[in-house]
Length: 182
Image (tube, rainbow, N blue to C red; front, side, top):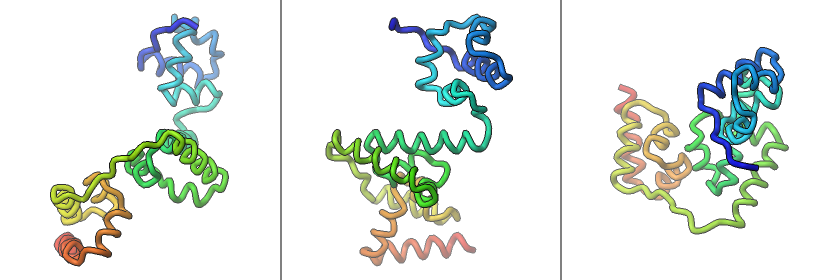
């Protein structure tokens, strides 16, 4: 199949609107003056278009949730550990999703397992003094531990792991929280 130039965002949005209003794909492509060969590569990188091509409305809460879940699976399949994938996703609650839906939990495990075959030594983000300061500053500003960790580019479990083994860090966290409460 020859390579086509993907649709522009505006063209994809117009096609989605036509599909949402019940227009047949072939008719919509013709009416909008688009190249059908450009629709398919666009759908690969335009999740809303993919949902519309599947015959569903991409702008419903259900489909937005489905897209977030698909993004999380993609991140796992690319080799990110679940805690880092949650930071990258920055929406929804993947831990809750896995707990509520056994089939989704199995899909997450399968995506992670598939990525393991291609694994290399992953870079772990260390809690350097600069990262620690960013975390504590965000915590002092009144954010949650989870939000402060995300602002510093680390995971919530990493924060609590460090808190357990470093009494000075634990004291700094407590002081930051106390300042935020004032």
